[in-house]
Image 1 (cartoon, rainbow, N blue to C red):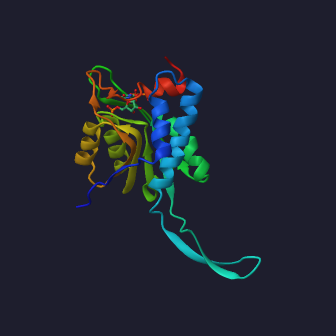
Image 2 (cartoon, rainbow, N blue to C red):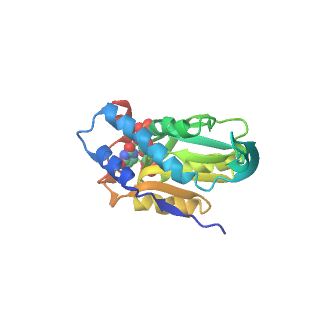
Image 3 (cartoon, rainbow, N blue to C red):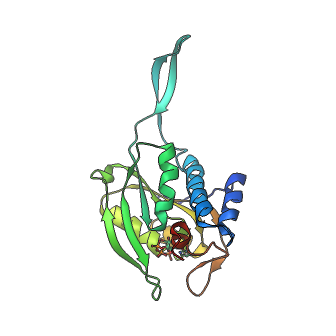
Length: 211
Ligand code: PRP
Ligand code: URA
C-alpha cells in the first residue's frame, strides 16, 4: 500500500512569512500578499517530482540536449473560501495550470464540512491534482475534498496547507494513505472551537477582511 509522506517545508523564507501571518497585527493587504508568496514557495517544493523529458534545441552557440517538463497535466483545487488565497501564487509559477473549485464550509457546531459548490475541469481525472487550503485543522474539510476528487476518478492527489494540526494530518493519513501532505508548519493542537493553536485565526476572514 502507498504511504503518505508528510513534508514540513521549513525553509527560512517560509518560516519568516508564516510568522508574519500569525501576528494579529498583520492587516488584510499584507496577509493576502504573503499567503500568495507562501503558496509560490510551497509550489516549488510540491512540484519537485514533476517528470522531465529531453529535447534538442539550438542555442546561439550550439545544438544542445535540454530538459523540459514532460507535459504532465496538472490542476489545482482550492477549497473555498480560504484556498482561493493560494491560487495566484501557484498560477504565477505554472501559468497554464487548470483550476477546479470546491466549496466547503465547516459547520461551527459539529465541525463537519458542508459542501456548497463544485466546478472541475472536464479532464480532472487525468490530472495530477494539488488541493489547496491554508488550514488543516480537524482534517474534515481536506479529507472530504480528497474523497470528492477520488469520486471524480482522480488518482494522483497532493494536499498543500500552510498550517496543520497533528490531528488533521492524522485524519488525512488515515482516510487517504496515498496522498502526500505539504505544509509550512505543524502546530501544537486545536482549541475547543477547532481552531489551530497557536495558529493564525480564521484564514478566510483574514484573507477577505470579513472580520
Ligand atoms: C476553514 C479552512 C478549512 C477548514 C479547516 O474554512 O479554510 O477549509 O476551515 O478546518 P477542518 O480541517 O477542521 O475541516 P472555513 O470552514 O472557516 O470556511 P471559509 O474558508 O469559507 O472561511
Ligand atoms: N479554520 C481556520 O480558518 N482557522 C483555524 O484555525 C481552523 C480552521
